[in-house]
Image (cartoon, rainbow, N blue to C red):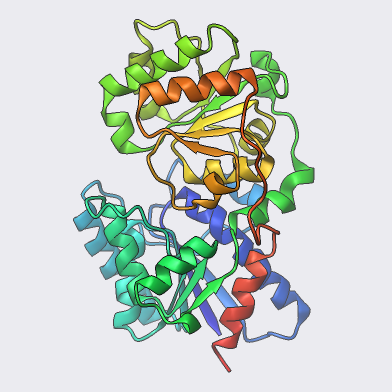
Amino acid sequence: MNICIVAGARPNFIKVAPLIRAIERYQAQGNHKDLHYELIYSGRDDDPTLEDSLFNDLQIKKPTTYLGVDCANLNVLVGEVMAKFEHYLEEHPTDIVVVVDDLSSTMGVAIVTKKQGLILAHIAAGTRSFDINMPKEINRLVIDGLSDILFTAGMSNNSIANREGAELSKVYMVGNILIDNLRLLHNKLHRPKLMDQLGLKEGEYIVFTLNRKKLIADEDNLHDMIAATCESLKANPVPVVAPVREKAAEVINKAMQGTDSDMKLVEPLGYLDFMYLTAHAKGIITDSGNVAEEATFNGVPCITLNSYTEHIETVKIGTNVLVGEDPEKLSKAVEDMAKGQWKQAGIPERWDGRSGERVVSILLEQRK
């Protein structure tokens, strides 16, 4: 069985790593000599977000193939990915294609896979914002609609997939595959040098991350949100550290002008260093679903700068609170975080570190 695993951006590698490690364990057992996989990246091999340490930390090899697609226009990107992935499949025998999440490149791969009559499996299926004006929502609908196998993280995702017509036999609740990494690497975490450089003490700082293009583009509202954050920390001062990439740092610096912000902007950290930083924070403010999921697992209070989450379990069961892009809601939540007043939380079902194993077991059943 030849499995092709496709990643379209840095976060995808974090989610497919447990699957790759599980496949390699099966291979090592010697009972699955016909089991092979290839890891494909839709982007370029010189992508600066794919540092060597990422693959070392995740204990996986780098991609065997890079499609080399890199363009801002999403429609052009989809077309280029489709053409190059079709060429890849023509030269590489493939039985199953595994995709993850909801990128435009992922949708392009999904379309080509089904045009070639191959089995398509989707990790993190059944996630919805229910906002059809979001490009990613269209991607999700297309990818899930085409998929032969839908791997979901929780019951809410199962319900969405079933409600939209997916057969029960196609939907498998394997749990949150992101958590496999956290459980595996927990004992390998070490305090980053950055914390000593900034004088940060465990449990006494807040981590701020920003990646969402829409949020970065609205500079006036971002200014108000940063000002609200600073104002709400005056009564209970807590240092804020923000590991952000160049574009986000530029916009945040501009938004901080005219505020009393003492937010410390730093270069993005390696995967393990960032994992330690967030796991030992007093709280987290983020627009990242992955970061919010990790916060729930670690029991760290988390504020998400969005009005929805693909994994509602982080809100209903976990530590996550949604404030949208509302400075007033953000201010109240940050105030509660600084005071140490947060809701009781737990870990959702099947966040047990065995999702990758479940996925491989189900994929192997396809050859029977």
